[in-house]
Length: 508
Image 1 (cartoon, rainbow, N blue to C red):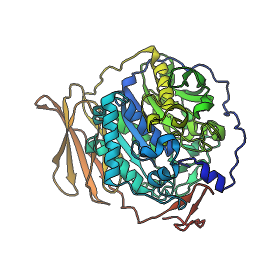
Image 2 (tube, rainbow, N blue to C red; image 1 turned 120 degrees about the horizontal axis):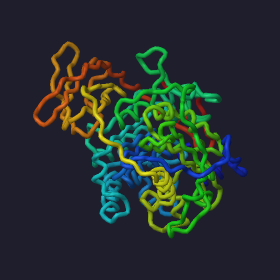
Image 3 (cartoon, rainbow, N blue to C red; image 1 turned 180 degrees about the vertical axis):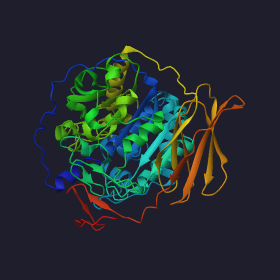
Image 4 (cartoon, helix red, strand yellow; image 1 turned 120 degrees about the vertical axis):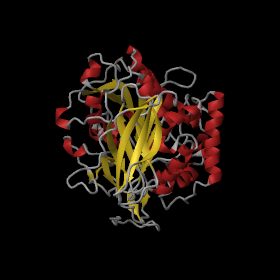
């Protein structure tokens, strides 16, 4: 799913017909101009969309304040193998590592250093925003331990790449759910035609429902965890009570060659129609924020219609949170470029046609990145800047947890210049754990013991004056994930063993 390749298609006797039009209920119109604070933009993605989200977050780090990546890898993971997508098999082996047909190649320290160096070099030349902007981002990374498409060492490398630019207290990594390769959603079961996979499955629509360990009857809410880490505590609207609407729009006005001349969306493997979820308040003139959600391979509108946009779980948190959600669409193409699975470009299939330098697809003038950013700028065309808001007293919330980490988020406190996070172990006294800048609304505690109890409080500071603490919040860390070694055949579209034999076995 994460990646489309011609050689695998040939081996499988793969043949794709002409795509069906996206199943929107209304004809696509113009993308609206709203009052959005573009500097509050966040991005997310699954699989190829995770790579794309990372690319967008790096290229526009001056505006993007948060990145969520499910089953993705480090920036410029394809390295020089992306030159015209000529060595795509090596990119698969390095940046996915789960298909036995391609020799896995570990992302070692030397390769990671090259990816970091490319980021710094491109930033110095202005090909991307200065990497200093990455220090202000919050990063949420997810890897399900039954994911045999993009293996855990790849997500580990993504975390390590971010550590070169982003403080550790702003990076959360969840890896202890038994999820397959999928967008994990608490909303897909609520929507008509949702048809969630069970948690450990890989395939179908690649949208899974996963029980939240230790909370009987609750589903893990990936979208809610990420968005609250980025924006602070939010309130979820039930799917049936959503007040906004999903609007189709034409993507052609935003797709251009690097020369600036128009190009048909299909020529850069993008769909004719994209979608945007607009909360009622944003439609009625309120200043809002923007989240860009990138689907994965085989989740484009040509295959799923609007199902990713309606069941991924973001709209439910965006509705009351005044967050506009942009769902740009890739599409399947067979020739010029070769992208039969409808993936976003992270290995250079567009560079083959538009540029002869490896990695241009990952920079500001990458044709897909530039097209989506034009969409963001159009949405923000009505202007708007969110005024600083603050509550009189701190409200602290646990928004995510793993075996070793806890992600905390809070509503800003009026006048706060910094926050002190205090932690108490079970039966112990609270001790200061971190001092966080007053402009931030989240922090990640690391190095915790699995299946252990902790209690946190938050104290705002106004200069040297200390305000009243928040009410304490309790959290029990998750169990460590079991040893698990899944694999997946891209050509056959099924889970396999290390030796390439189909299997239904999953780790519990």
